Every structure is written in C-alpha cells, then in structure tokens.
Amino acid sequence: MVRRPTKIELIRLRRRLKLARRLHKMLRDRLTILVQEYLI
Image (tube, rainbow, N blue to C red):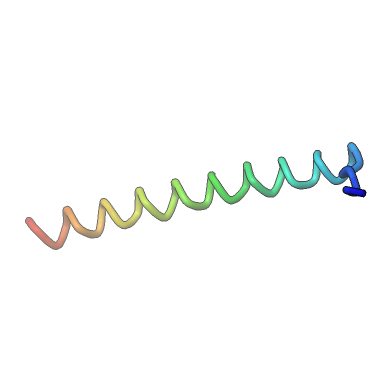
C-alpha cells in the first residue's frame, strides 16, 4: 500500500520547489554575469 501525500505535504513540497527554482535562477544569473566580466 502506497501512502498518499497529504495536501499540506504537497503544498510544502511545491513551495520548496518554487524556492529552489528561484535560487537556481539567481545563481545561474550571477554565474553568467561573473563569466561575462571575466571574459571582457
């Protein structure tokens, strides 16, 4: 029997995913800027 995640767990997971995506985008943008500065 597979335990189904509760609504609260799903909301919490979704929030964490959104945060992770935002952090990842920020890091990628910063890395791009650093690389551009290095190449110039």
